[in-house]
Amino acid sequence: MTKCAVTPTGKESPFGEEEIIVSKTDLKGRLVYVNPVFCRVAKMKIDELLGQPHSIIRHPDMPRCVFKLLWDTIQAKTEVFAYVINLAKNGDHYWVFAHVTPSFDAVGNVVGYHSNRRKPDAGQVSKIRSIYDQLLAEERRFGDDRKAGMEASHKKLVGMLQEKRMNYDEFIFAV
Image 1: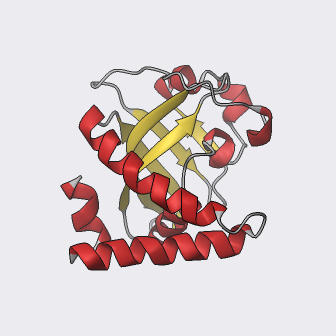
Image 2: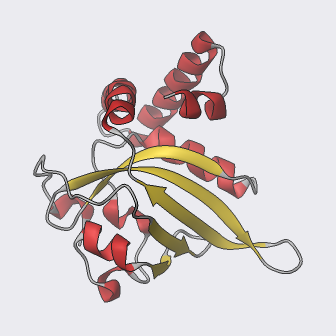
């Protein structure tokens, strides 16, 4: 599945509040483990996922600056929480509240990353969607210059946090 080959349907790929989507990646973000819930919600078979970049499920409405923040955080050996909209193979979407952590070997080296994702409630999605729409609009102002768009969007996100007098962790748990 290539990200540009799938058109979002606007329809939600459901999963239950009690379910947890789990994945593990190597250091480059390639999937090395996915649980059955991940496969069902993404509407993909395990052999379509393993070895692929985790971004295989990236929805075009997901601001790139959030992924920058996520990667910056986990590469600094720290856990991060984030709201993410993903894209299933058939174009359906699903929102998750992700908890991403680095995985360490016996001597403290990062050997990969682990993510557990739960279903956020509709109120959380509504609030975060409004913010993500603003960030995405900022990214898209730069057209094909994706790097400049992501940097501008990241600056906007930092500005939003400063305006609220919150750090990212405080903000994400206040949603």
